[in-house]
Length: 112
Image 1 (cartoon, rainbow, N blue to C red):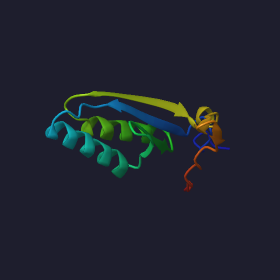
Image 2: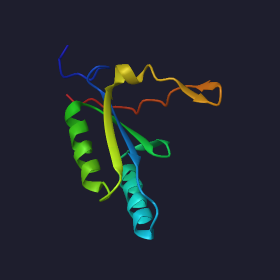
Image 3: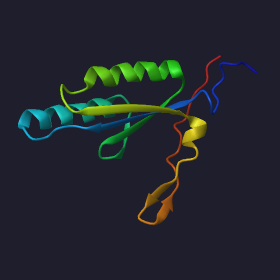
Image 4: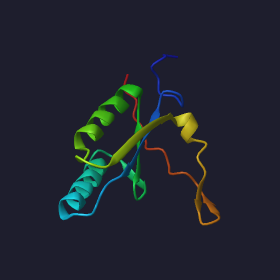
């Protein structure tokens, strides 16, 4: 088996957390454009200011980190956190007191 094969320790999840000002029309526009850029780059909204994206590898994750940094508004607070697929597999999601299953992992194709 090749070391480069996708596995639960190589596949990554990238979280983007942000707190952006929305006091002025310009700030609201910057915040909306940032959210749209995240969605265009394949991120899914987990909570209003928390977005998550599946990345096939650390190298792929680096590409998405650069895209997020490029699209960040001029003001506000943004954090990024990466975890392995193995770690993400331990997530517990609740809707009220009812636990919900984690979102399905996107289908991956492997080319030789």
